Each structure stands twice: as structure tokens, then as C-alpha cells.
Image (tube, rainbow, N blue to C red; front, top):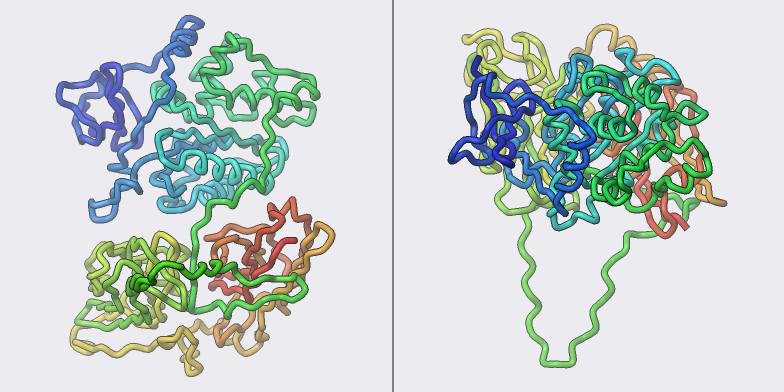
Length: 618
């Protein structure tokens, strides 16, 4: 049987291949082979995974180099942008696994964005079936995986253990220290959110990735397999592969009195091979709590800011305001430079940056929909006072129910990676495109999301009906805009565009002015916000129905934080909830730092945010 794949790495006369069915296998290296090459090979060429013995463990330890850089070229994983991806975005800097018994492995770049998600077993495939994780931050990707696993019943009791493992792959990156610090902070945040049943491990020993590939295990389960061999448990690679993390911990007698994994075992799993060699393979679980505390590494969740993606949704959020009760301070500005004593020279000319007013027009041409939007020419662009740089792509977004569609919440029909291309045409009856499926005769909301390295913003929204017939709508360029160019909602929106039950809800739903207030006092922070009178409400002339939850959102750098892009600190599904209080340490807030804070109101039909506060932590 012939197989296809791409060469990830060549070492010791072996070529490690990422196959088209998302496996990593090893074959005998061929003459002239190179990393990234797409090859065809026979299944019989696959080298069977090796099994550990005491001799092979010792030989493996002695053979470890001081640093190993495994470069995973993301042919399948990351080069989806018209076949011309940025190598910095598709180079794997981190391999992360989420193991329950669904097993999922994430390939992550230096920006902490997911390149590709790979199911390690059938349960993992079930979890991934309805998820699209490529491009997400790793923290949000893990959240999505765990939320979906819980819905499917894989996390259904207090005894379920969840293992989140990160192995840094590219130890030669320039910002290695900062990268690992941010990863530790992110992992500590997940532990806080999900409690003691979730434990995390971070390692910079990239040899683990190689061994995991040879054994067809996730990096997390590979750590357990290696540890099991060290302590002489007799567990085989097949037993490790098929067992849940809860069962593995039980079989290794690695749980503490509460049923969570013993801290000393985490410490042993996280240790690299060189440290284990120095210890002469004497790693054993310590049942004594004091010993465990002495040997366990402490992660301080407020060490540095969590890796986040700056997001702007200009069509909904009110302008930033500040709460006096929270003693907010203005953003720091650069200190003035002393006047030079030498003969003054002309100040360097600052680069000119384009300002943009993103405008979308949607028309019809026969059975086709035509889209055109505002583009820009420079290397950066200013929108609503913020500079966006590092253009990624335009996303054409559509929704049947959300009057303010935005990527990634509402998916996308297509994306365009060239900023000079500002139009697109699609014929829903015959063309293949993304999500959602456009049905002729149905009416949708359309917008363009402009995506950059440091954030995103959206155009106005256009409401348009997908054409059914050539004769009656040829070359029409009329559109019914839901919002004007400034992003403000039009007051003359046609209520007939809503379903009949939505019309009834519209007449009875109360309007809301979403305001959040924040108090910081005595080491605690308290949030208070406007609550709903029912499960639906009107905001800025738009009806939102079927309330899901309030999300308390905080970010140190993004001036317009929003769920899910910036995660969340707390949520409530009760419409009557109007406050939340916690300690500054539990919230991960550092003294002397300032943070942007807001509430995201989430409904089945869409979402909006409260005012944004910039709060200084004393």
C-alpha cells in the first residue's frame, strides 16, 4: 500500500514523515532527501516502533545532545494560505498534547498559535470532529478541546484526570526564555481554571518528541511510558496508549491522598533526560507530602502576562471609559527626551501610515454574489486610533442569525492573503466555499474581518439575499446595510428580516446599557455589571435572544478584550448575576500593572460587550 507524506526530520539514517492521514512514522532515509520534501513510500517501509529496555534507556540518556532542534515543516499543518505560508508561522516551536483518554496533539508556532491539531486515537478524533483549531491561541485551543470533551462525556466525574503537556521543539529560537515563561504562565492559568484534576508539564527536552513519534504516542503519554520503564512498572507502550490518564496514574501508584497526581511524579516527568542521567535513574514516586512539596516546582501564575491575541470589534463595543473607584491610570507614555546640546538636526520623518474606513459592498450578478471592500497599501494601517501591522488576510464572513458576524466566531466563506485583492465572487449553487453553506433565496449578514499579527477589526455589515434566478437581479449593486461606515447601527433596520418568533421577542425585550464597574481594595477585585431582565434584550437596536452567559474578560495589552479571543476570568449562566469578587492573586493580576477589563454578553444570536475599563492594580 502506497502512502504520501512530508519529511519532518532526518536523523540517524531515518526520515520522520508526517503522513497525509496525520501520523508520524519513520522510514529509512533516502539519498538526496530533504526536510519538507513531499514523498511517496510503501507501508512496508515503515520502521516498527522500538520498545524500551533498561539498556536502551541508558543508551538514550547518554546519547542526548545538549540541545536538539526538531523542525516540523507544516506542509499539511500550516501552509494553507494559497500554498504560500510564512515559514515563521508554520515552523513548529512547541508540541503540546491534551490527554484524558481522548488524545490530541497540537503543533504550535512561535506566536503560540496552533498550526495543526492531530487526533492520537479514535476518542481524540471524536473531539476534533467539530472543532477548527488552526490559528487559535494554544490556551483557547485547550479550552475548546476540554469543553468539547466534557460535552461528549469524556470528562464526567471529579475523578477524571487531565494532562496538558508542552515540549519545546525549537530550543534555538531567539526568545526562548521569554517563550517558556509565557508558556508556564499560560499553563498555570489553565490549572487555576480547571482545578486540581488538571495538571500540566512543560519540558525543553525535544528528544521526547522524537521518542513519541517512534512509539506513536502523544508527548504526554511518552513521558509516562518512559517514567514507567524507569520505575520498573512493566507497562507496555500499547497499555499506555489505550489507557486513560486516570488509569495510568492508578497503575503507577502515582496519585496522592486526594486522587490527584503526586507532585513528585510531575517533577520527575518534567525533568529532562540529562537530569535523569545525573540522578542515575533513581526517580521514584515520593508518597510523603513534605517530600513532594520539597521537590515539586512551584509555578507563579502572575509571573508574566499570558500570551494573547489582540482583537478589535469596532462595530459593537462602546468607547473605553475608566472607573474612578478602581483608581485607573492612563496608559504610560514615553518620557520626554532631553534637548540636545549639540547642533540640532532635523527630526527623522515618521513613516506615513494609512488610515482606513473599512467599507463592504455586496451585490449580485446573475446567480453570483459579488463582494468588494476597502483595501490599503502601506505596511500598516490605522483604524479607530490603533495601528495594525503584519497583515495576514481578509476573511469574508457570513451568518444567518448574527447581525454582527466576525471571524473566527462565525467561521468564514473564504480568505484572501494578498492585501491588494479587494473583491471576491461566489456562486452558491455551484461553487465550493467555507462555512456557512449559503442557500439560494435565504438572507444572510455579511462582513469582512481584517486580520493582522496584532489584532483584527471588521467592516460594516451588509444584509443580502442569495439570488435564485438570473433574469430578475442581473448586475444589481444595491445593498441593505445593517451598519453605516462608522460602525453605528442604522435605526431603519427592516424587522421583517428576523424570524417571526424573533419579532415577538423584539417587542417584549428590554433594552440594556451594558456598564461594568470595578473596585480594587484589600487584595481583592470586585466586578459589578448591568444584568438582564430576561433571556433576550435589545442593544444598539439589535435583538439578542437565548442568553448563554456573562464572561468577565481581562487582558493587559488588548484595549478591546472580548470572549473568546481573550479567554475569560469568570462566567455565569444566570441572567440575575450582576457581580463577581475574587482575590487579585487568584485573578492572576500583578501589583503595579494595569489591565483592560470588560464583560462579554453572549447569546445564541450573537454577543456584545460592556464599556472597557483600564484599571491599575496597586
